[in-house]
Length: 228
Image (cartoon, rainbow, N blue to C red; front, side):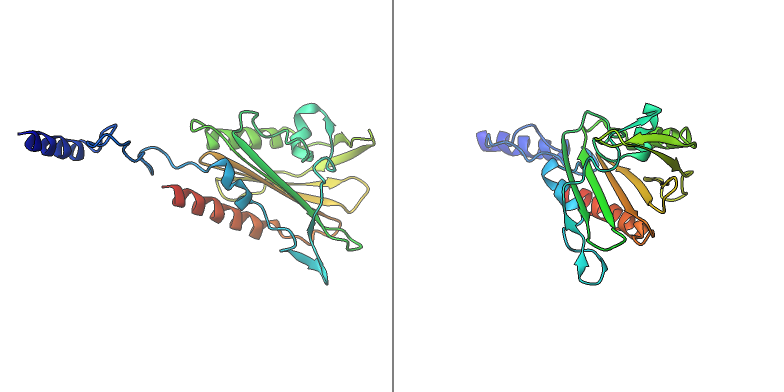
């Protein structure tokens, strides 16, 4: 009789797509995939950063890791344009992140190349599309010269460009440093629970940011698939 009841419970659990605990008393595997929403975990964020010395733009001089998180402007006027022209302290990123990883790289070429990256994860209720809409609105509202300064209070004028059309998961634009050749390309990617920013800077715009963006989108999707 007990065996029959046990079998009935097992069949019922299967029919109802799972029970909170297995019949033998051990925890049932947590549901994953589309039903629960695949999430990227904070420990996986390092996979969304370009490995040090893997990218080379000058002969014999690959980009190598160096702490430059505060190099691209510590503040701006107007303040709401800080995230449009600056990288350090991540002013565009919501503060509710559950994990964050950053890596900054440069080479020693005469016309130095810089690659600045940061990725962060957010709670399951994070709305990636709404966040990107807010980024686009901010960039569109800063289409004018912006005064920016570094940690030493040296002030410069930065000119943001309009948004560059592309993937719905990406907001892209660029900035020019007034009176200089220096150009930075910005890309903010948001998908599921993760935000990833890539900034490439150089006097000659040697780094093509689009392949980096395409690769990052692919890496995010692969991580989401691995948790589904």
